Length: 210
Image (tube, rainbow, N blue to C red; front, side):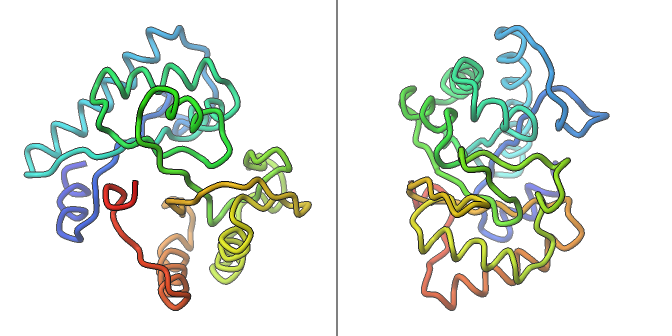
C-alpha cells in the first residue's frame, strides 16, 4: 500500500480506497452475507488503513470505490448500497464515491449527500439492465486494447452505458475503469489514454471533475 501511494503521489494521481468484503482467498469477488453493522465496520477498517498510509506519505484520501462482489451487489441492492454510503459519510463526508453509472450505489451516494463520480468499465461488457455481464460468461471481460477503446468510444458517443444488445442507459461519465489484474491492463490503459487524448478529452484527477 505504501509503495502504491508513493507512486500515485509521484504521478499526481488522487488516492482512493477500494474496500471489499473480507474475502482474501477469493480476491473480494465472492458474495458474503454480512450484518449491516459488521460490513460497515469492515469498510471503515479498510478506509482507515489507506488513509493512515496516505497521511504518512503526505497525501490525502480523496475517494472510495467498492471492489468486486461488494460493488456488484451494491449496484443492485439499495439497502447494501446504503451501508456503503453510510460508512463513507461516517468516515469523511467529503470523500468522492466512485460508482457505476445507472446503479443503485450511485443513487444512494447522491441521496447521502456525497459527491459521486459516475464510472464506466473499459474492459467489461454490460447487460441491458446496465449491470456487468458475469465473469463466468464468455466474452464478459474484454482483453483486446483496441476493442476496449471501441467500447469506451461507443459509450462516450452514446452518452451512457451501451449493453451487448445495443441498449443505452443514459448517464454522465466521470471515470473509466481498467481492471489492473488482467494480463493486458497496462497496454489497455496506455492505449485508452492516448486515444482519449487524441479525441480531445482532458484527463484529470477526480477532485478536479466532481
